[in-house]
Length: 69
Image (cartoon, rainbow, N blue to C red; front, side):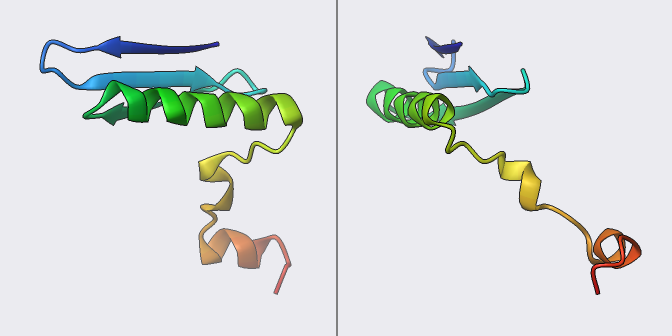
């Protein structure tokens, strides 16, 4: 599911869900920019190419404790 709404402060709030059901949102000054982001995100989820932005945020300590080093 994806949606875009205009906030009272005249900023566009675009949000979409991923395969895991987690919601992601960003703010845009122009509606066309928000809609473009939603279109790209929806297409990547449908094609299976979506990568969660938080997936790459692993601390070195966690990485080390997993025995990867």
